[in-house]
Image (tube, rainbow, N blue to C red; front, side, top):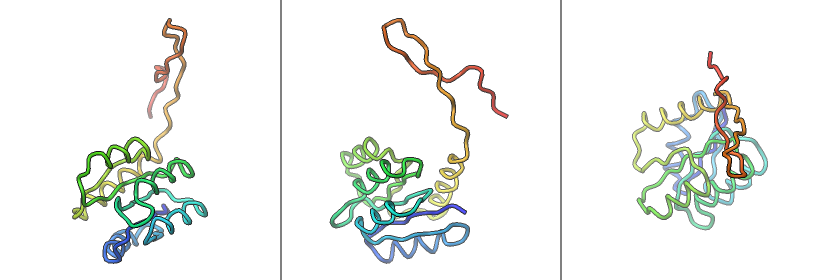
Length: 148
């Protein structure tokens, strides 16, 4: 069973997320960035849905920390804002899978979670070094790789 970490400082949003995913997943909830960091440092999670703007430690910082301590965990940013600079920081620093705007469509968020978790089970594509002739190596997908 996959473990989801749901993070939002709004109790109603957190309750809605928890209700949405309680069937079929183990859900962990955090109502602050600080609580989220404690969970991330103490137990493994497969997927994180985190609000962008929270008092204290915000979503970008939480997801950046998650990318360092649990790099395999899929990170989804939930935001009610369209601040491009913050979104770019989150994409670049936290390597998020996707950002979802509030209010979200429940079926769309569920579909996003399902697809993201399917990606956890995909085989890793081996990389083979190829000389570029410029004194450095480039990495390309192995042509011998065959999918079943």
